[in-house]
Figure 1 (cartoon, rainbow, N blue to C red):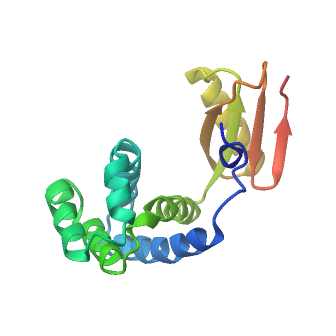
Figure 2: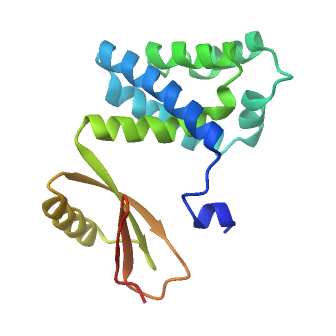
Length: 178
């Protein structure tokens, strides 16, 4: 695990800022079209299933050497019949501005904006072993009652923990780890 992976506060502030700007535009367009949930799900799929599993695609999207028209052709060929028109148009705009390399930052910001819109807060949960469904439900329920909001769990298995868990919600940390 690299230092950046250990500390989720280590971030390229330029990428974070660009991500927020583009995410706000995407969420706004998707909300106006009534497809915000669908577009967020598809953006997650794009980043998780396509970019993470294909370093070549990720490099091509980020490369200034590949021209905008070629990137648009790749977007249409790969995603044209499976992604919503709002997301496709957004990807083409990002391609035209040579910003496809920031899709991961856009995804992070879009999820945060969407969660806030829906009245959800994100709780980061680090455990030594994966959570069972019962424990996940119990943690989510307890945190929802404590925070008076719907809680979305972001789970991470941390091999350095022997047992217990560490829960982080914003700047609050609940540490019951061993």
